[in-house]
Length: 311
Figure 1 (tube, rainbow, N blue to C red):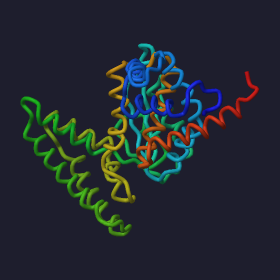
Figure 2: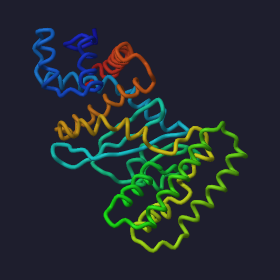
Figure 3: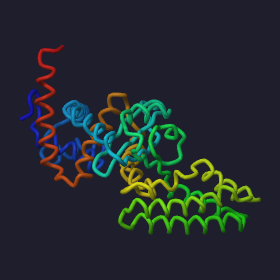
Figure 4: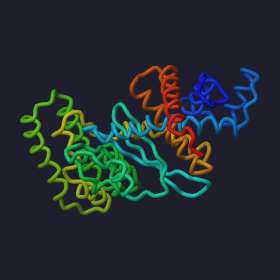
């Protein structure tokens, strides 16, 4: 049993899995428990379980962010959210083993700056082209998937110029070469040679005298990012795209589409914290149920010891 909890740990884990691993709405979780176990737990009761879990997970949630700050390669992404109908943003930071989510009222660059404080200047941040990341004091890998997607979009428009179609073909070729380079075992001297070769190809795109607006729009993306599209060549284990971040952010997008976001700031904190814990366990390929049980139990003990006698 978890101290001061009305429900046993098995039921709490059941609720967490239904909400965050499967994505069930709170009302359906309540009905599922009633139909399966003939146990009456109101929607408010389910919400209370989730809030309690967030408090018990608190130290593990903080440790996730510490791990990301210390990682040599990290990703970031963001998407819109709502808190009681008011616009907000979900920020996501992650590595191959950790996922950290938070909901903030701002989309300003101070959010990633604050969350990634303490990162080393030689760390690499894989991200999209949102300006809020640009001034972060570390190396940057701009996502190729976004650049290729924009080039494809321009080519699919009615009246697309031959110029932009040719540029798209060039970009696809460069991307193919980059994938081949980073797939090979890392050798610093070889990578530096390859980097200089690829720089010249990016320079050709930046310096080209394009005549059509669609080609110029694609070109502008590379003028803005310049050699940030090549960082993966110089550093080991850096991907060319931010697809991992987008994939791990998708459950939050689905939740937003179903529920519209959170009804309160507390609800937003709870959803971000608990989802971070569940996704991190999954990223680490740990068995979900026993790992959740261990973290809940040890976290609850520590939380109640820390708050004993307070209030």
